[in-house]
Structures are given as C-alpha cells and as structure tokens.
Image (cartoon, rainbow, N blue to C red; front, side, top):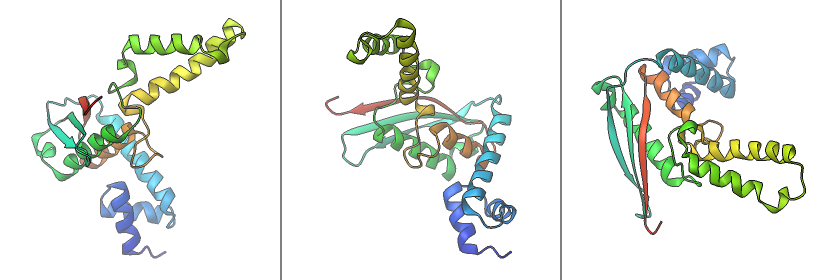
Length: 199
C-alpha cells in the first residue's frame, strides 16, 4: 500500500508525532487516518504513564493575552530538562493551554479534580439539592441525581479533565500526555492564573 507524503504530513501536523511514526501508524492501519491518529494517541498515553513518576524540576512560566486584550493567563508547566523547556513543542503546549484557559467557559478553577475548592463543591451541591426539579423526590434518588451532576460540575472546573478547546475529542490531560509522548519527558501543569477585565 502506498501512503502519500501529504497524508503523512497531515497526520504529523494533527498528532505532533514524528514523520516516521506517522508513516508506520498509517501503514499498520492500512491508510485509515482516524485509526492511525488513535494508534498514535494510545502510544503517547502509554509513554506518558511510564514517565509519570520522573522528577520535573525544570519548566517555564508562560503568559498569554487573548486577542480582545481583556483576558490574560499565566501558566506554570514543569518538565525534566531546560532543553525541553526552551523547545518549540513545549512552547506550543504552553500556548495551547493558556489559550484553552482563556477561551473555555466555565473557566477552570484548579489543575485537577481533587483540587477543586471544597466550598465551591459544597455550595453547588446545596443549590442542586434545593432546586425545583428535586422537589418531592425521595432522598436517595435526589442523592443519585446530584452525584451525577456534581461529577460533571467538577470535571468542567478542573483544567486537566476539561474537553480540550482545539479538539473536543480529547481532554486537556490527553493534550499534555501527547506532548509527553512526543518529547519523551514527564510534564506537569503546576498552576495557572486567569485574569479577566471586569470579572
């Protein structure tokens, strides 16, 4: 089977993987672009899992001002070496995450789900339990419904579990893991801050 250079280049652009890896993925999936993309993504996630325990003492703080000049984001992303921190791919990751934080509604309030402030979770839970559509329902049913809604609420407010704004088929965590697979280093989002005029 002949795989065109154009298809390989397109897969490389979309996946961030190397040219040879993209070609191998396309050959092994008999030219199926989506299947090749899934294969590369799974490979990247495996690499990321293997590197999760490695120390991240380097990295950078990256700033982004949205095109409307009313939203700004600072993000601190850690990696293993200064060499990777200064590279184009790492810079692209920093930029993508800042842009995501600036553009996403509701805005993330924490890096991971377990860091979402407990008072915010408790307030939302109380609001849901007291809402009109819960009136007259038995307590055990209320709890089940609210638990499901709370899972969604927390997922939407934790950066890593949000749908990635540039590709909703993946989460922000998947975007980070793709970068880990490509760069061969552990990468962690340490913290971020979002500023909005008038907010």
